[in-house]
Image (tube, rainbow, N blue to C red; front, side, top):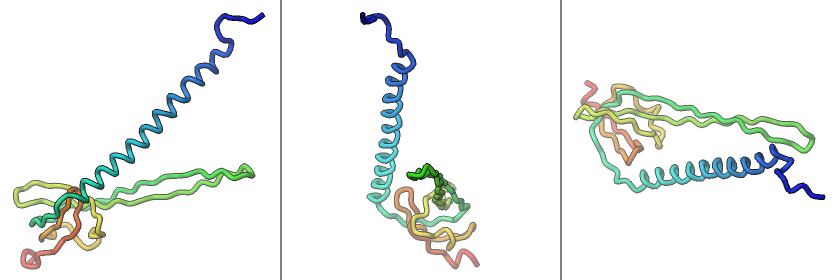
Length: 137
């Protein structure tokens, strides 16, 4: 007859329990990431734009790369690589406070460390920089 005792598949039962839990956790992390990035973008886009006098004290790049593996019907795997570079500019204000801003308007190549002038900032973004030529003399 039928064995009504413990399941014979011990390891399989564990996997059928563990896999859905891990899948839900990974999916939740991805969804939370999208939501937080969207919220950060919306916050910066809604923030008022203000012009402040500041000095450029540093610049940095953050290169993020990713490899995707594409599986083809013939069994071949072709990896594709992609990367994205984020540019940041750190400003020092008259009060001595320093803050790093994400460059969303491609200013990175137009400013150098030591430049002083009026920076248009919007939330965590730097959106314009007008060099003060009098300060450079």
